[in-house]
Image 1 (cartoon, rainbow, N blue to C red):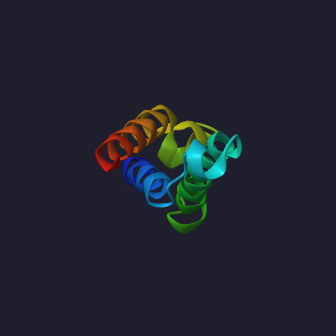
Image 2: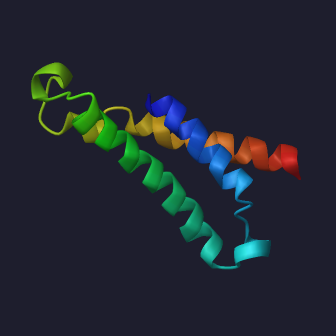
Length: 87
């Protein structure tokens, strides 16, 4: 699920055309904000909608950390890939 959200976050960065030419110095913060928003949405889904708890995830607060590295890597790679294709 985090993989799908990472792809969506990268695509959103590209579709919103978040780059320095359009947003100046604010572009980096805006792009990171989009990624953080999608990650928080995935955390809420895991915790509230799918009702995964400590027993299912084998640890306390694993709904936050589980899949975080994959999310960051895929989000950045998809953002760079689609930006490169688009320009």
